[in-house]
Length: 627
Image (tube, rainbow, N blue to C red; front, side, top):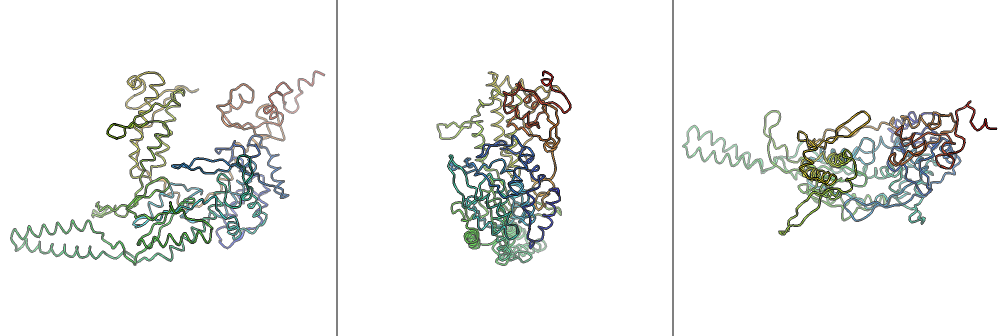
């Protein structure tokens, strides 16, 4: 069979032709190489050991298991299990989001389907779409807003109500059939969409939506919402009116002409006028040039200069309008009508708003506004320009880092008699029993996590307030752990202004420093990922996990075997080292172990440890000689 690399490359090349329809895709599901690559991706992901409704996990993965899946696909007897539904909390909301957990075998099939769909559709996706796509993220989306929304006057904040739960299956399949002419492949997608879900052990059929948590849901949602991207581009083409430049503001032209007039009068006064005439002309010139700084040079509502800017991340999108509020309201109505009539989706009334660009909107956790500052700075030629006017600004919302401090239990709030709040650092009781290095590492990870996400913000330095509370909480945590004072902790751990703990490793003693790198705005990485074509080779690189599975050797007994079974555990730290296989996994520092069927049976059934162990070929067993 052909390698996945060749297949995905060919699919990607053909996908550049928008009129091409793909046939015979289903046969790629007979290729075990695809399933091995799907296995390696799932094995390293979070939740890989979470069981679906059938109770199975990645533990026990083998080529026999993959061959069984392929046989069921080949004879079309494959039927996905209902997903196990659970609920996770939404950020900044008391509501909960439903999450579907498929069975492990279904995860494998979904991952193969996903990479095939991605190879077909990714080249044709809009450059304005950033959610669940290779080399794109919240940062690339926000970076595009920062670069392309310059000068917008109104924001249309779009939020699709229950997008993932309300995707119309028939509309989705209709969209897929435009590019895919393989009914077996389409039928498989129907099976996933109609698999249903189990909630409290009660089966519920699904007639719409793509369950969040399913491996194919993100790509299917992007395929579905790419219709919105296409509509936005058509809307932009019809709406945009663009001369070379905006017309010059009449008020600015009048004031500039008046300033030039008084400048000439000043020159004349210096030659022939009195001191009083000179002072009067100088005052008038100064007044007029000061007024010019507060007047827009170009007409902000020039009807011959209109534009739309658009960007989308999953089901959240914003439209920037260079035009009037009436234009923004019309665009919002048109988008709502399109979603309702073409995709059977509804814009959320409470979340879809029209906001003036001078005010802040919330998008992907950032506050966004357009600067209306008239401050001047010199360009590279030394000319004064109002470079900040119209520039998009990203801000860290205070409640984001404030809520993180409360979430981490790093502080509590005390009310004063005058009604003001006092923020008091806490010691963190859950960290007290951890080793010193683990405590510092935990604090560092939490600080770097919020900084790495908000590093695009122009006011990211406000995280210094977050840092000071976290630093005080660290001192209190160490003080509580060792039942001593701040002074003793400071004297023990502070060296040259840095909080440093020492810890021992096999190679000797090492040091770990508490975060002290500051909080500077960093936008360098954001533009580099926009408009990059996906590299399908990422799906085709074999790792040691696959090589170990295909090696034909048992890592526990050392014997050769035709069937290698992969034993998986959730966490290495949960192993006690009381059995041979636990000691082996701790020794090789892996959460997986490639074993032969007999050793796997011994691992799963501890009572078999007193039986004859596996032996390499050609070696006579001990008990064989007892007869």
